[in-house]
Image 1: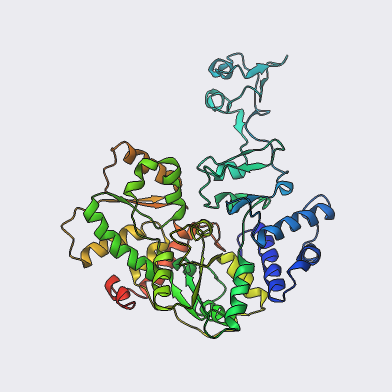
Image 2: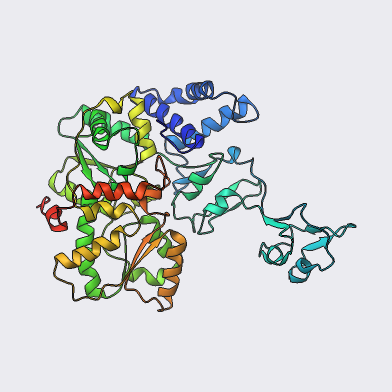
Amino acid sequence: MKKFDTQVQYLKYKVLREVARYSYEDRLLDCYSDIPKIIIKESKPTMRCCVYKEHTIIAERIKLAVGGNKDNPNVIEVIDIACDECPVGGYEVTETCRGCIAHRCEDVCKRGAISFDEFQKAHIDKDKCVECGQCAKVCPFSAITNNKRPCENACKVKAISMSESKAAAIDNSKCIACGACVYQCPFGAIMDKSFIHDVVNMIKKSNNNTKYKLYAVVAPSISSQFSYAKLGQVVSAMKVLGFHTIVEAALGADLVAYSEAKELTEKGFLTSSCCPAFVDYITKEFPQLLEHVSHNLSPMAAIAKKIKETDENAKIVFIGPCTAKKMEFQQEQVRPYIDSVLTFEELQALIDSRDIDIATLPLDVLDNASYYGRIFARSGGLADAVRQALKEQHLEDFEYNPISCDGIEASKMALLRASKKALPYNFIEGMACNGGCIGGAGCLTHGAKDKNEVDQYGMLAFEKTIEDAINILK
């Protein structure tokens, strides 16, 4: 059964798997000499112009797999040497240009960037062009195209530009760590830093210390991952790895929905706080709306806080689809509760580094959360959960009018209208990734069926109310 969407994901996984294996064996220093040989031996022919360049790129991937550049606070980094195959990009005139005499492209260009050769074929001066796109709009032959790089296309907050060396450059003041560029880069030249080495050390410590308990808080979007095995077998695999207890982040979602519903009735207008990339986007682009962001912790942090309040020896690793969570857990208000974060890609690598055959394991269960907590994983789920929480708290008199923003572009439009006091809704559910968490960059797969699988997983707990789920914690 295919585990990944692309060969880029597979390459990334292989590096992570070997780094985890070497971490377990206390041989991390051997990674740089051994892993390139292992990876290149598995990949024929080479993925680059020569074996030497491939060795160098894999060495850079290893650096990111053990934490990356400590001087760069962003968890998303560019491997410069791997970013050299895409065209420079921008608007270009193709062979479709017929050399017409109308010259609409020239007339519409306010920068004088369009000129013509002796055959009346148009040319664009890159030094003058500001990429407004007006020339492409007026060309009757559609002869002008925008060859923007995949990473730039993927980044909806315009945090990616080209450096002097023509490699991608990330503007940390704009980046929200959503990881869209990581998933879309066809050469794997943009990656998220990994904390897999730290997690291996936590597992080893928990195995040698009876008081030290390692918890895994698992995102509900796991229900749409690991398609080659049953969810209960994945839970068993995590316990084989050394996690003492597996807890649903969806239980934290129940806590958040219940509290957020009450907060909404008190304030009258609210935006969600569950998606760290969405909250970061508000912070950077709409700071005037920060007072309207829910004061609740995210589901990840909310349930982790509960665990640490009841078990002082707990160490907690969040496992989910989100690269932005790697930024969130380092924030001052979250750091006391979450000790590290792994993506589903990294969980797969960790399991395989120990040669665990998931398909042969018995079924374990995740039985903490309600239906409404579990459907937080997809766009619209949070809005539905808040509606249910209003009902359970007998707050139906409040006129609830939510908008579910599927992706950062939809979120931008809602926030823009809210900033101008022109939004006819009183609750914004913001999700940076298309589809919600099931579209996160750290997913194994990004299939269209994910939403249905999340709903089916939720239905297993349909008889449980949000209050029922929360009462488990009392």
